[in-house]
View: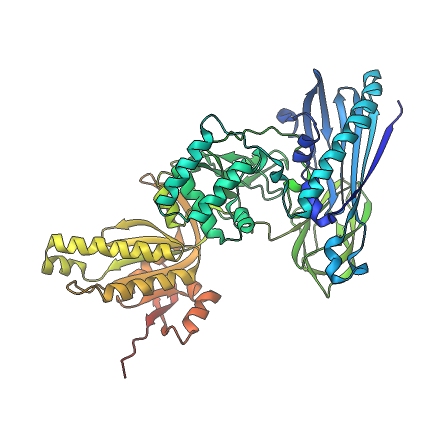
Length: 620
């Protein structure tokens, strides 16, 4: 049967860069243009290659099923997809969308760069399977789609011009019965409890106006960027809102290939490995790289069980700047405008990847060759405005994926969140399944102990000494929290804590020692021994709480024993951290670091350690 071809041109006021996040969000675009919801046919996806998916929907009571090739795109100028149907009135559908600047920036004075518009060309090729398709395509695509496309793109253009997102299309929040009143009442309790009132107001406004797609996966660092506020403040506001009953937290698994993955409501539901159906791979779960904390409204306020209208569009993986499907022994040249920084090129079947760096001085034209032997080991320098020639030198089809390596800038990872005091205070029950062990990446581990505490109990009595020990725990918890760390547990008079930043751990301990050595009048000074080591750790559940173990933990425990009580003993791994070196080298802070070597119990080698003290100067 004949193939139908439709071509629509739209002259839009916004630039391609402004429009891309909206039009490339094909899940939301399909919903806004009236496309029915889709479902993935999970049972048939494991045998498909290169991110192909088997999908289905029902239109006017007619079941439709198809195999969808991976979307191809060049950000922010083109994307498209091919669908081959096994059920329904259509045999094949191809979509290609091009966004071209109407006025090139270098043709305009600097003040007029914001006036760059876009000529958008939306093309559809549809081949019917039967007579029903022959009649349905001209009506459904030729007439109805044209109208809905024009209406939706006009609205997207209006949003893009004002720097808004597609989430702002929602004009009326769909609260559950009593939901808005509950939201306002709980937000007042948050403010009364000490949460910044401006952040609470911003969160309430977001929950009132964002649509269900945006609310189904709230990323606190994205909110921070929108609100122009520090990321940690937005994260803590979301954690407090969860504790108050406004939000629910969820742990999103991040596939190392596509960065997508399912969500779970509790750490205990995480396993040590997971399968990504889109990439058809199994991967190990790692708190630092593959688990992200996100939020969604509590169901007592707003429902966010949104349907799916498209699965593999470009905006699902915004870190991927180009994706191209190449047949065996073929090549394709593309032109890209890249931000400065590091990238990697990979395919889904060849191990490893090619490292790239985009800069002003890089090569303008580069051939990137995928072979059966893998990729070149050296990092290639490419221009920011580059012409890349992808060459598939293998005997198999390859999906070329070019992605930014700084993909996790907006991710509040599980490794970071679980090492925060506010998280451990508010969500003490969040722990892994008993027996489960998951890597958390690199942490700085602290152990402390009070010096001569036994003698203190004997000299001032058990009750008074116990009170001083409790007060010292309060001081430690505060200085640890101030440096974005978390107190993991107390062991007698000792403390174990973790930090993401080694310099913060050093500052916290030196501050604690200063406070304990100069207590309020009438209280006995205390001497605190402290040891710090940085390295990889494993998360486990111990005594129903999230805990850590491994050689890094063992080393930190040994270092505390080398402290004399007015110093912090740090490992060479802590000392080598650039921020720690800057801290110790700042003459205004008055820190001193002395190197020494010593064997440690349980370890074979002698270790290079550093004794850090605060230099005390006498008044002149």
